[in-house]
Length: 78
Image (cartoon, rainbow, N blue to C red; front, side):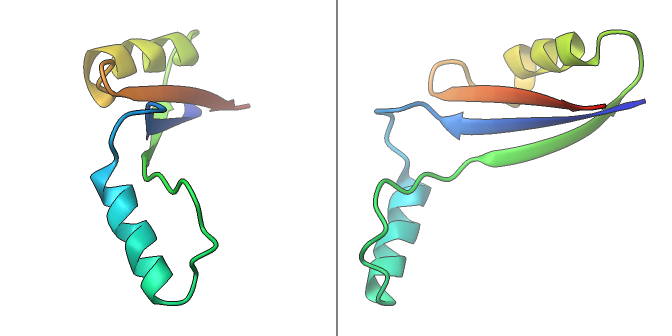
């Protein structure tokens, strides 16, 4: 098994209402210096086989990320 970490983030220029809400809340708490806050998701998978990165990419394209509004990165842990 190979541990694969997928990070899914909203594309640049796409509205991120959750990120905006957190940024406003941080501002109210005195952290007004925070800018361009975006919220995404981290997905950890243990994938068997010879091509865990390729399998993860296929999973992202099919289900884990919305290609219209999200980008993803894949990191393979040894």
